[in-house]
Length: 72
Image (tube, rainbow, N blue to C red; front, side):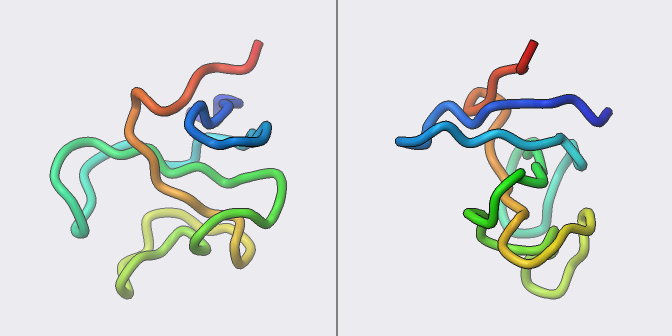
């Protein structure tokens, strides 16, 4: 799973590693959990007390599949 991706809806280059793919408690549909290279995220891999993956504080973010592209 641990693919390198770029978040396409960010104003600056933001890249990270996929750590989670699946359904979440906080929204409908499939979400991608990404551990970012820089501390520009919103969480540490958990949302509302539910852990989806583990990262350092402010390095985790959840995005829709259409909001990322693979880094080659």
